[in-house]
Image: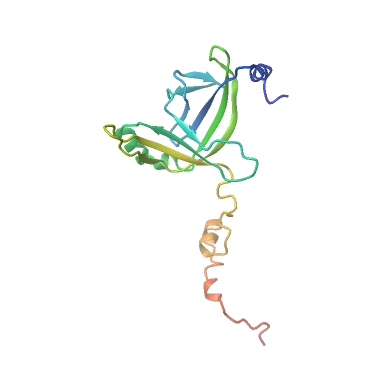
Length: 193
């Protein structure tokens, strides 16, 4: 079984290859699927809504090492209503998954085969920024959401310290490590006759 279908291999072998990035955001209340095209497309049994060229993805690349990569999804030029909603909905997005895929298209810009997954990660809280004003034009407001890949916080063990707080996270109610700080520099004589 091949990773690519025969149609996808033929498309990738052509002199002109048409591709686009598809992003699937798994928010708490709903899953949103977006791409930067001008119309909705159906691919992989899912419908991808258009961003009409306004969406941006920064930091997406190929990494040969096992490092924590950070990818930022941003939407510039948004109105006050969307900005307020983005800041209000932080729990909606925080630590939720995002998948970015590569979609191949034929000569008529119709999806060819299923999307090819190229990156996934965990969303961080949304941020709002505004560019500086220039002459007679106002600044541009941007909503952005960063995402960290699977290696984010990988070196830090979950509840891996010998503290009461970490022990409570592992085994709630266990009091074994509650007195560790009082045992520091204490002398024990063993055996005691």
